[in-house]
Length: 214
Image (cartoon, rainbow, N blue to C red):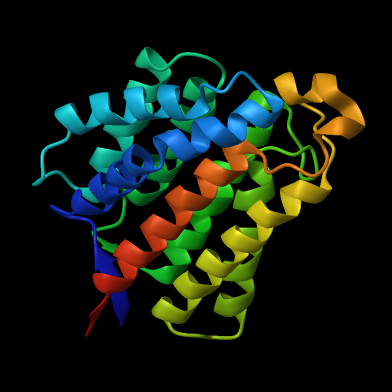
């Protein structure tokens, strides 16, 4: 059986926080092309606040819960509630698992997608972070269906996230400030899709390093 331990594994969440911190300026630069240019600043503020509240011996699911709650309460703009919902849904799905299997990860990702659709009314193709999260999850699901190893499934998640993010250049924004630009939003990466890609790729890479075979 392949799994990632939930207990005392907050380092996965801390790796995600560090990745956002390191890419804050890049995310704001991307956001500046079609939005207010503050996506990286706001993300970094919320993630670094969460870092202060996460203990290294917390369970992975508990650290995700702290991150989600912090983003809802302390980050500005629309991304706080959106990412807060995503991390809270992931946490809620995984907290029942002492041993996080590849099937449990798919359930958590699907729950996160549903939560985001319910919250913001966003759909795939609207040029949002869903355009990273959904194809990444579909790639993961396909690998799982083919009975690939946990590590291969996570690699598929990573590849799907990258492809989804890059595809936002071809989309017209339907939601958020970029929607004001209409067709002129084409040709640019979506900042939320880009931050989501960083999050998913970091999570996948960190989990790959932590897989236990029994």
